[in-house]
Image (tube, rainbow, N blue to C red; front, side):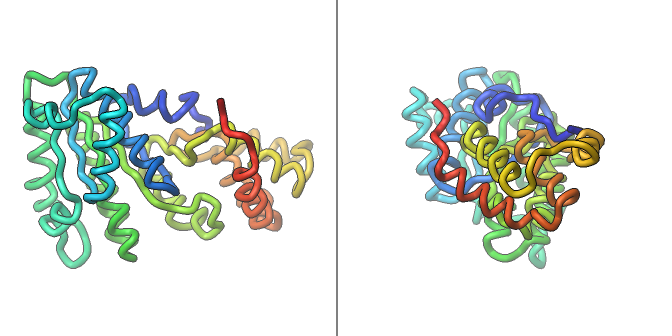
Length: 270
């Protein structure tokens, strides 16, 4: 089904060993999921001898630090030896925003120089950066600024060959997002993590489609098989919802509504 098929079995597998220059976004709906994901990404980087930069809100950084401790990682020791760098996202935004948009020159002076310095440090085998500039801007109602932040961060990931990870608060079952912000976020990332439990998400989506639209066969199946999908790497169940919006627009809202309800009912993956 086009490029929408995921090449990783789980988000844990993806965050442990992302490829250089990858740009991953986590669509989260709870701070616990954010902290768990970011801590895994950071802990694996530290274990692999990489430099790790974290740019987030105070609340989120506190949650990540707690989770790092649960992963047998001492964040304070990593900060002291220079392998881990932690910074406040609001202070970072104040330094780079001009009229609500990230200024490329200021972004390079703040984020770019930090990344370049980390990449040049011979002690480290690579660099990982987690941030939520776009997340904070979007929550402030600044969608244009959020997308601009993703563009500049993506360019930095490619320029320096770093592993970049973002967290973005969004309702993946909001129908407006499929032609708006959720679609934009998929377009601007190499990998998308749409849910904490891939199995639960797949079961919910498949059940909703079967009940509302019936079996996918005949011309509908041909449409699905020939669909080009999205340019990013994401679980097939999430890609399927984007296809439903195009191929079955009359059923789209009902399928999303049922999938959201069913995901809460499905047993969690063991």
